[in-house]
Image 1 (cartoon, rainbow, N blue to C red):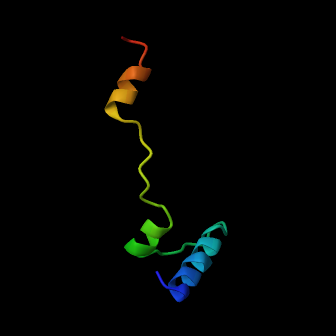
Image 2: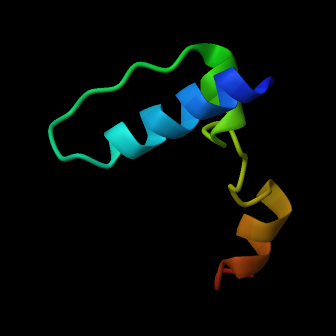
Amino acid sequence: MNDDQLEALNEKLADAMVPGFEVEFDPDEAEQAGSFQEDALSVQDATDSSGDQ
């Protein structure tokens, strides 16, 4: 991502913090912003956290 793209992404992220303001991100921008960061529990972690064992 070049400097101009990074600056545009930062502006969009700042705009997204304004309540009611809708900002559109293309797929590359969304990925750079961390929108697709997986943080869900694995099946094993979910099973291990269950009290039904």
